[in-house]
Image (cartoon, rainbow, N blue to C red):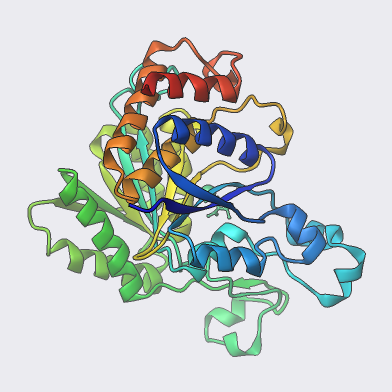
Length: 364
Ligand code: IPM
Ligand code: MG
């Protein structure tokens, strides 16, 4: 079998360190791949006006999947000021590379497992085993925003309460987009023997958009009569997740709610050092630790690389390397359970490299 071709996109800050740690484990697992480096991140925004250059998009199109570290992003005003002086006049606007990759490649599933590893001192409760399916291409992330209310938005009676100077962000939810993410959640539940899928919404206020999502969810749920289905408002869901997290199993929701809920769920199992994601479409996927580039820790080799290592395991699973993926998961579980190597978040002072080497050592 020919080697896998992986677009390798470490990005900025601690992205570089956690990607290096993931590579130690991938190599130790005997995973054979050609890693093709892709330019991405703040440096390229400043020098080229694009954090995800076209050459990197071309690279994505010629590889099997991508592994992404993290990137630094800043609010619009600050981003514009940091753009190279010779580019200032061209009016570039900063766009998040990860959001662009999700949309350009139609990676509509954001899969975020949140499982408590036995012996993790940071567990909120040891019994937690949640999987979040976040819709990854539409909702509040479509990028349609206005700094002032445009004429075309005029609609009675709401406009009477919206002054001209109001900024507007548009939320778009389609029946097809909703059905495919809900179906992905049910298929996952069916494949992994999961008992329940919960669709999270705010249909009592966002009647139109969440109404579409909920209708689609109910329709798809009928195709899976052996899997329990329920729904919850997103505000109540945050409360229930803290009160009774063991009552939940697979959670499916729209883009922004999924962004928020998945950070909450990650914290239940140890925080961002344990949060990892697969951005998955029908033909391509980008795997990443969910955390950001953490500039204040960059270059210190101290952050917990487990999220990146678990993302690497998920990548192997998606590529069909199931045995290697399972070995990585087991090695992570053992190193956490033994508790001898601990990064600062776990109360220790071991480096990211030491953690990766401990996991790699346990694999062999
Ligand atoms: C995530 C992140 C991204 C998002 C940011 C970096 C644009 O928070 O993957 O959850 O909002 O989707
Ligand atoms: Mg997020």
